[in-house]
Amino acid sequence: PLPVIRKAKAAARFEDLAQGRTLVMGVLNVTPDSFSDGGNHSTADSAIAHGLRMFYGGADIIDVGGESTRPGADPVTPEEEQRRVLPVVAAMVKAGALVSIDTVNASTAAAALDAGALIVNDVSGQRVTAEMIELVSARKVPYILTHSRGDSQTMDSLAVYTDVVGEVVAELEELRGRFRAAGHADERLILDPGLGFAKAGAQNWELLRGLDRLTGLGHRVLVGASRKRFLGELLTTAGKAAAPIERDAATVAVTALSAGRGAWAVRVHDVGPNLDAVKVAARFSA
Ligand SMILES: Nc1nc2ncc(COP(=O)(O)O)nc2c(=O)[nH]1
Image (tube, rainbow, N blue to C red; front, side, top):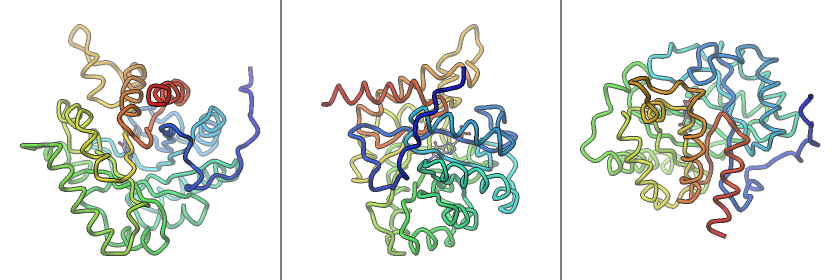
């Protein structure tokens, strides 16, 4: 049966986002090689259909990305990235969704903002470009600052910490200083521990256990655990890690527990169950 198409929500604004609960950001990867959804949405039409399903399914934000960020992924040119994402951003904005653009390229972020995206979601971490800092500061747009080291080719080798929570916090504070110096407002800076980015298995769990250290910095915190390798490794049976699509229940558990610790939002593939989880979590702290 056709999914019940709810009346599109009024055009969403970042300031209106608060729902009295942790928000749900639906992942919309318009890439042929995204690990988590196997590139099911490599064409704009199928991506838009998937984005609409998530939006009408209640996602508060749709995160549109045109370049797979998984370790070892091949980089794409900004031109190719924009060819992939801009039609999808425009369609989701037209449907009334609040869109974040998942990119490391300032040129793609600018084009997506021009097409109506409201948030820049950049997983660059320490390799954030001066252009990106200048762009989001000049345009005064919300920016998700994700902790990472190196790039998709080198990040796994840089997952060496003596105190992963302390070092991630320190490195995020250092990066925050660069945004402050460019005049970007603290209330528009959202922090993200960057699970899986220059982190190996156990370090991801340490960061989740230490989430209070991140929320304690006074910014909104986004948690992106959905379907990631460290969940698959946890769910190993007969020596075989769980496949990405078998990690959704564990993702929902992380969602509930992160919401209980004050996460502003969670970035997930399977919107419905995670939306239920943040509603349940809100009852535990009401
Ligand atoms: N802010 C933020 N953005 C992200 N973008 C992509 C991925 C990689 O996961 P995917 O390949 O499933 O999109 N993870 C994050 C994340 O953890 N945080």
